[in-house]
Length: 106
View 1 (cartoon, rainbow, N blue to C red):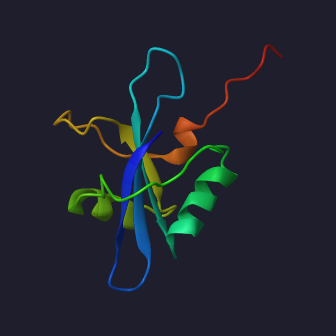
View 2 (view 1 turned 90 degrees about the horizontal axis):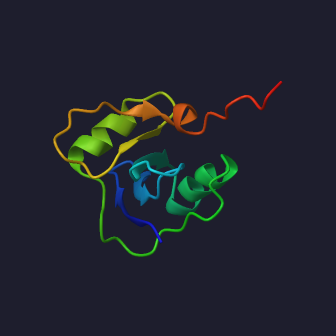
């Protein structure tokens, strides 16, 4: 189960924030931000990238103003960084760096 939430922007679009389990063993959880027209479209964007079991239940952990600014200023509108959001100073990364698949023995 992922913790997350959303924020509706004045223009009608939304920013969805989800804290997901780490993609590999021994790694920390990640916070993913998605900017989309509506909540279902945001979740569809993540599912199309291979994150099939992503659901937004409630609005317990909505995006902070800093997170909203980060995703709005990224060209893809889809970024991530390690969670929790302690003051580690880590920058936001494009989603393609999280989903990078290592070459398989060829």
